[in-house]
Amino acid sequence: MALSASSPCVAKSRLVAISTEPFVRLSGSKCSFNSTRAGKSESTCRSGSMASSAVNDTSYSLASQRRTASSVAAPPWRQWGEGLEPEAVNQMARACQLPVSVAGALMPDAHFGYGLPIGGVLATENAVIPYAVGVDIACRMKMTVLDLPVRELDRRRERLIKAIEDETRFGIGARFERVRQHEVLDADWSVSPVTKQNKMRAWSQLGTSGSGNHFVEFGVFTAREKIQGLEPGEYVALLSHSGSRGTGAAVCEHYSQLAMELHPELPKEHKQLAWLALDSAEGQEYWAAMELMGRYAAANHALIHQHLAENLRVTVLLDVENHHNFAWKERHVIGGVERDVVVHRKGATPACAGVLGIIPGSMASPGFVVRGKGNAASLKSASHGAGRVMSRKKATATFEWYKVNRVLREAGVHLISAGLDEVPMVYKNIHAVMAAQTDLVEVLGQFEPKLVKMAPHGERPED
Image 1 (cartoon, helix red, strand yellow):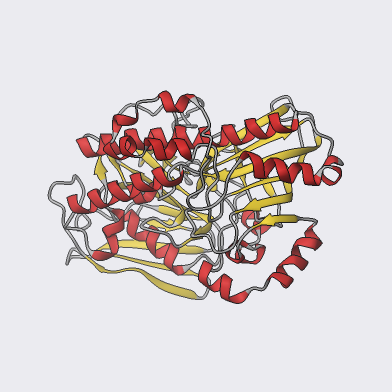
Image 2 (cartoon, one colour):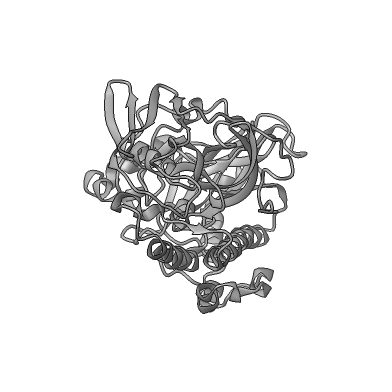
């Protein structure tokens, strides 16, 4: 399996060793995996005083696979952070029981998701799992630092708001009447019937932001040290978060369903972890579609930042960006053996040694530009944000705007639009999340949001 040129870990790759002992010590918790004589793979996780059965009575045999749950203990995985949702912990344990899984990690912003939890990192051998990449393929972050004085955030507020409104679109079906242009449209969209069928849809949504937790915001970026030529100090920065829009979701829906049809032997609780073999026609087709969606998502961000900078007639001083819903072909030493693996990061930031990334907080809390430390146990990964503590439905029923507006005023944030399901209180404390992963990344700078634009209240999320 050739290494993926798109992997952030390839250029500065060093072989890293991951232990495969069946007992795993976690940060504040522990998990033990045992294969019973009856062929049942059992996992029990404890965190503080809370105990939960991660996988109960799960037994299946896949004769065509090189490893079965009945013959080999599940591979090790580590957890960062305390008090994570039991459902997310259970999902991670189940993912590690797959015959194709070789290692895993759970980030401190983890919460429940489809198949693999948000904040889950999973290494597999010769297999890619569509739901371990995520519905919003190549959801990513991008920050550009602009040559605009910080005082202009207040002086030119209405001008900045209008620029955001003019240069991107929000909402589940958001698109431009006058379509944007980008070289990604010259790529081969026939690599998959799904991408071929959706090319015109993707074109109409090029440069848009969508809904859910996607945002575009201006804020103050404080560089603590020199970053790629940018001197320490305070700057105006533009930060965006979005992915591959409706086309990426269509790719995920098609290939996750196909994977489940190809693996009827999987028990119900593992269905959403169905995989595609990389050496199969289906696996190669999905991989090509996923990589195309990666380029498409990057193009969306590039156009948002380019058009906003041109609108405001400012120069970009620094550009940092990264995927956090994707799969990469990487090489790791696992159990003393050098192996080519597929590393799925679903709501996880690549944190390879020396690689820059962005970890946002909420609309009223800071985000951070970080440099990866290349931690082997985390599969060179870190959190992708603060992580939710409340469902969208509960948030909408719990909060009222007058209380939210008070929180925003205290934080000095002007909210252009958003839904109650994305207010600051639905997220974990970003400072606690960052404190739980000091062995994964170092902080180079901090972004404080000031002008925030998200999809209006009532929009269906597509994150």
